[in-house]
Image (tube, rainbow, N blue to C red; front, top):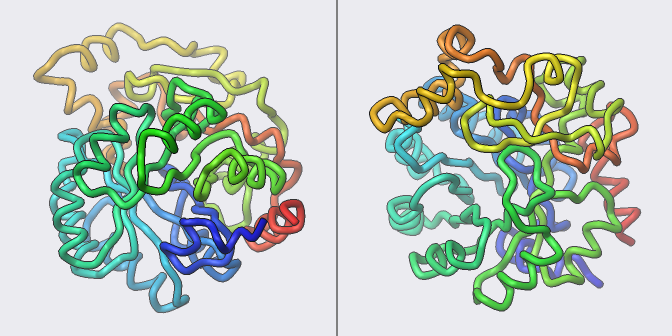
Length: 319
């Protein structure tokens, strides 16, 4: 099996069919630059930047350092007040691809294609995959039950074949994979590439605390639990003593904010907007500073290493 023949490699002209998944408050320019140098690609959530000027500067930095494809992840629903500005900046700067999440990608697809930019859409089932394909998406990202962060309801072993049968566009698997053998297994199952996140948290390039990185080394798949405390939507986190102490269910204020139609978008914005952490801390008993998102693939994380070393190992295992 030649990984360069995969649809993701052909779409983006990369050597190995891996996207470093966009991770809220984790992904940064250094991770993407090192990924591109290693022959893969990556994406950063636009909401990792407080302003569109910061986003534009990050895009410039990556382009100065490397010649290779990279993407930006856009939250395309009302909770993201900066969506229109972020979309405009990315189109002006001619990034290579968008990954859309949590809303209709219709406007993003139209503007992106007008600027020669590809659009990959997060999906969790066949129904939504068919919808975004009809809108003109270039690929779907199959967010599986094994994914870190906001996971889907279906296992990758069921979702990938179902989407391959339902769609004509490429299907990129997201969730549960942390080894070269796992990558080979997913491609054999029918995936056209993979979005891999959790194994890249414990890296020298990641901007997170040493505590977060070490937790990815010390804990494993059995230590991943679902919480609704961060945004109201089930999210996978490491079951640290802090999580055990605070619980995984929303408190009364969180429930009110997330159920009230008028307040809901504000509540979700508090969670997703990096620049509003102080408000988030006041309103919610759990924040992204004290609760560490990760998926079960941290089972394969044994030490804190460089992106380069991890990609080299994935390639070696694959072969």
